[in-house]
Amino acid sequence: MDLGVIARNFPFMAGGLLLTFELALITIAGGFLVGVVLALCRLSSRSWLYYPATVYVHFFRGLPLILVIFWLYFLSPVVTGSSLKAFNAAIISFVLFEAAYFAEIIRAGVQSLSRGQIMAAYSTGLTQFQSARHVILPQAVRNMVPALVTQAVIIFQDTSLAYVIGLREFLRRVNLVDAREARSVELYLFAGLVYFIICSVGSMAGSRLEKRTKRS
Image 1 (cartoon, rainbow, N blue to C red):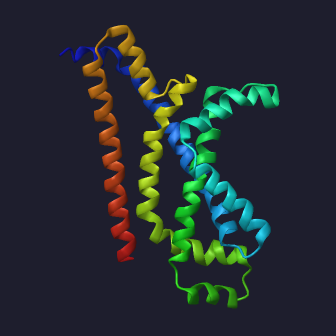
Image 2: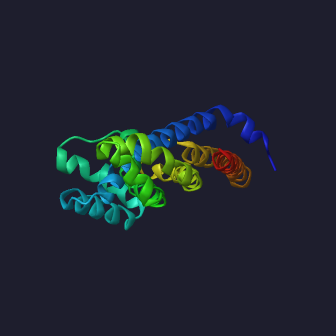
Image 3: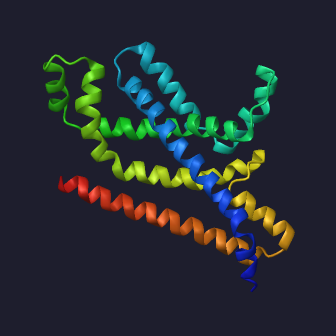
């Protein structure tokens, strides 16, 4: 095995890894914020909020992510008359898609709270939005921690799908190096090890955070 191929091309591949982290972090932040809105709409008794949010969640949860990326990147020029950059298309696709999953995680977290706590928040005179912001969501987050961390790890893994629109994230750069060096075994073992280490660290951090929140 020629492990030197990794050392020679490490700066190039490291640049892709940084792009992967950027893509994942933006997706997690954006998907969570949109997911909060969708979850609150799904919990609302108002039909004009509940039904559109429900359709949105079921629509995106019923599609493969790679198809969403294809649609947005290749159909946007047809619909809007202007094309999106690969990075922007990937971000929008990931946020739209992952928001549906975050919404269900958040909805389940809120529903795990006792009805008495929710009614107590309303009885203090807080509006529905204020109750959600100051009372309900902070408590529900504790119950969401394991699922949120798992979803974050999945998002990091899913960033590799951006290769289909030519975005040079980590795995795409590994592929480009392999096309030049013809060292598939070494390069893809390295890529697998990188993903394994990062995802394992994320999972362990999530477990520690879960234990800490339970103790508090």
